[in-house]
Image 1 (cartoon, rainbow, N blue to C red):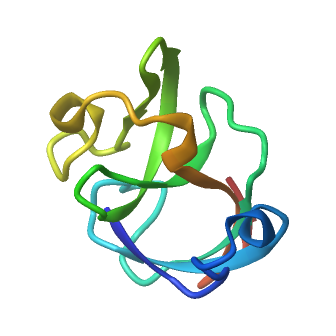
Image 2: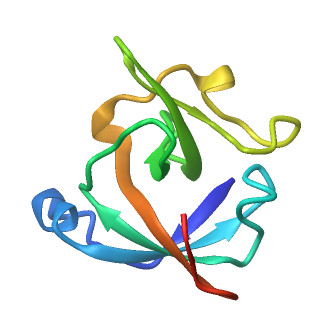
Image 3: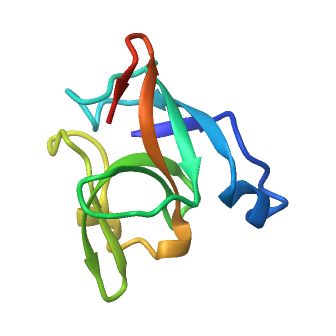
Length: 115
């Protein structure tokens, strides 16, 4: 599931880590939890732990929303909630902690709810 990030500045990583931002969901790999068009509030630099939904950058530069499955020696293992759709760590491997950009706190639209 790709996202369209609407918050943070790439030129200043430390500032991004202290900010909140918005992301727009594209794709169906996180259904039924998230759907295309959902708007998410993201806390950049927040504490990552298994079970949380995060915004991460894959090695090819694609920014995605995935669920953290577990910590491995090479990084975080990320999975989509809809295993039949999309790309996740089964295809890309573990994602380095530095490429997990933020934790999704809440879906703010269309119906607000915590994740």
